[in-house]
Length: 72
Image (cartoon, rainbow, N blue to C red; front, side, top):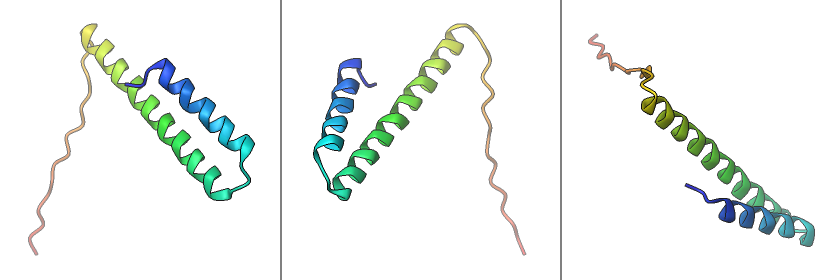
């Protein structure tokens, strides 16, 4: 899980890189880092929602993927 402090540290670092560089590569690396943080946050939100649902006794719909074997 990402802490509030770590998240804002990364945001501030990204803002400084964006303001102080003209390098396209550095900007792209910064954007990738921010998108990775975004994905981690979304995952944390989902995990928290599932934990709350389980605690509240809400039944979760889990999709089961069945592999079909085709014989020709």
